[in-house]
Length: 212
Image 1 (cartoon, rainbow, N blue to C red):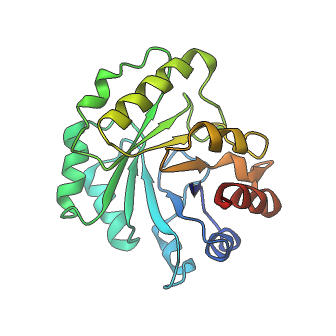
Image 2: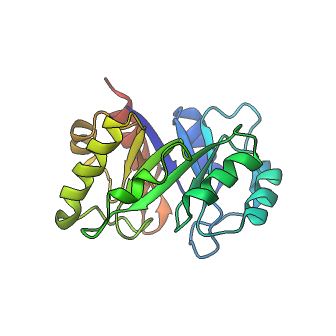
């Protein structure tokens, strides 16, 4: 199974992800996020950086996304807001389909699975997250049934999906076993202690996810 670490925002985290061969790393450009970085952070990333770089946006304009990506080249753009299917397609078109587009969906018990159908062919992967992204809130019991439904739909349509929301050192093995078909597990707060990057915890998480 693969792993994505989000909220990379300092040199120590960059070095860790490189040394540990983390599969995907998320760089946050959402204005309201405590993990937000500036495009100038690109100078902290080595040219031979191993992980695939993912730029996170939420309900930002096409022009803003394009301006940031020109300064901060990435392999993947992750849209984490209310972006429409047409907006997702526009992002792919702007970058000539050379950058993959991941679309995140915050799952609640009221989530309509039919909503996903509109994104088919306009995104490359679906990320199923808890109701409050980035806060370490797991997909709760009320939404667990919905999660199983969207996973079943994704697998039936042969669409890659990933899981986020409240994944940490205490439950990572259970997530790995339960969602073995997921493209990757996605963590942000799970590698932090008191809001700061915790190298030891992150190292243990990487080992668990990458071991066969």
